[in-house]
Image (tube, rainbow, N blue to C red; front, side):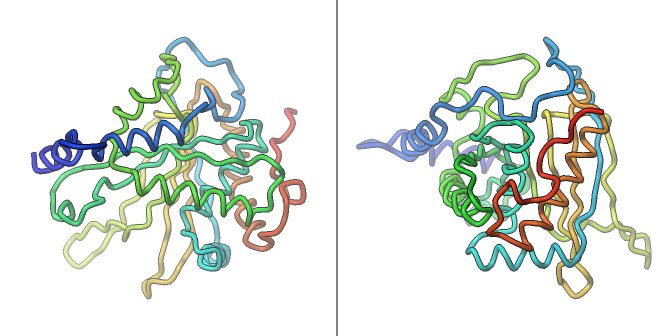
Length: 282
């Protein structure tokens, strides 16, 4: 109730001039103008008329050394680890046939105001992020483009996703998520642990056999006991009606290898990076 009251207050029409709601909708209308209808790799199977929600998943690991190099790259480029991951995923999607205009979704905490820090409950909102991969940019150039968009998107994160869909009004399909079909999330909070007396048992993700999106790349950032970077788990959930398990495995492997390559040489262009293109069918 506290959050609903806050949201209603800040998004209420202003008595004079454009209010916050008008400024938010104006930004997103311009930012998402001429959005591609789909922004996912071509599927192995035709999209059905309606989705059953069946899914599968695969997990690969980015080692500690690469994790730390990615953090140093982000620091040098005045970016965040999420922005580096976003750039790499956009590049991979481009090389796998998703086009030059790559659109992703990502969850945000929905606590952009300090007054919301102590509110109990799930306030998560969904942001739509866009990356222009055209022109054969180096990874550093692509990261700069991604950083510029992501910063602006975060500054305008308070527009509820359902309201955003209404404003953009994309063509609907009962088996396709509106605005984006690929989601990226970075889980960088302290890992949950179950206390059983003196024993501490880390909680591990489980598979559900479902998929909300064509592809969902969920990245878990691991840290050692001293708080230092200790690797990344790349968990790729895929729509089983669209992609074969082997395709999802190849995609996860390619993303892991791409992350290692771009932190080793941020000036490399896509054609010089290993295993970026989609593998040819057997």
